Amino acid sequence: MTSNTAQKNQNESVERAFLVGMATDKIRKAEARELLDELHGLARTLGLDIAGEMLIQLRDPTPSLLVGSGKADEIAAAAEEAHADSIIFDHILSPVQQRNWEKLSSKKVYDRAELIIKIFASRALTKEASLQVELAQLQYALPRLAHSYDDLMRQRGGRYGTKGSGEQKIELDRREIERRIHEIQSELEAVRKERAVQRRRRERASVPRAAIVGYTNAGKSSLLNALTAASVRAEDKLFATLDPTTRRLMLTRGQTLLLTDTVGFIRNLPHGLVEAFHSTLEEASQADILIHVADASDSRVDAHIATTIQVLSEIGAQDVPRILVLNKIDLAEPDVVQSFLARYPGSLAVSAKTGEGLDALIEAIQESLTKDMKTCTLRIPHADYWIVSLVMREGTVLEERSDDAYTWLRCRVPQRMESKILQYIAAEDPEVGKARESEGE
Image (tube, rainbow, N blue to C red; front, side):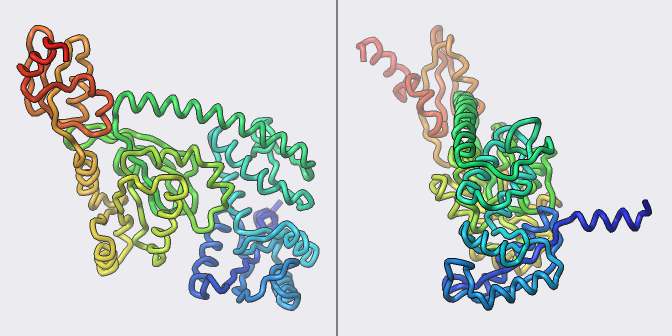
């Protein structure tokens, strides 16, 4: 086989997609254009070729095809002329609309939600992520039993519903899907319990935790790599990182921070994925501080920030302290960076690629972790000397002295440690504390 023939066959195997964006009463044309551009990025992330696109105004949605019959014929004809294999709508399609479109166009037809689920399925590496993706797939597929699932049910390692073994199932009856959904939910519950055990271990060690959050492709993994010398996969693609990764960061005052890179957010994230990845996103809701990363090189940065804040609210992380970080400043004009910093007082400008601004970010993290510290005097039995080590690691020792029975520390400690040191808190004057003890107080 010649190289030209091989290249031709390879090209023929790549799905060619025709993209349809929609402006509505709630989505103006400029925003619809941005969303359509984002749909381009999502399609390319999945490895699709873009055969063509169309941006239309949706005024009166119809139950059968979403758009009117005349516009539907126009879209189908344009997709056929572009030699597209599929049509992807940047709008939710009901199961009926999806089936009707496939009958009309004789092509695969799906929406933004299914496209994102396909991307997640292609990037799931761990058992937990694979289970979460499969759950989202099945919940999405349940009302669409008549829809051709194509590669939806490819298996990984002989397990049903995950990628890898090459087996496919074109049709699943409702009972089988529901059975598998219950089975996955039970497996995920076991994974969540293990994650909770791991989280409690970290809490007992009282090591502060930070989570890196932000819009997909904002440079979160690159920032984790730059701060901790990690080697997390970082690509210029949407959802390059799906599984959370935690690394240790040594702060300048000797403190240790656990820093977690989380899955990126995106506008119109399928609700099923938000629910399915709730346990993963708990890393954000349980953190002591969030590092909210935004992309300086993206003109839609304000909308991306708003989307991230919305998703944080959905997962119960809206009250966690946040540091807003403008990343990729090496790709932005100085006036763009200054305008951002003026719009968002207290934000920081950094470049994970060049290292610019990282020292200021580490200092800001440290200040955020220590600003709520309380001053107290601890009376610690020598048998519990681990408390002394804990305070030295996570707090600030102002004064230390020892007697035959106790180590006395006057110190400043974070509020998160209060439950661990409560029984050791003494009166400010050690002699008063001894007097109270002798009185039985």
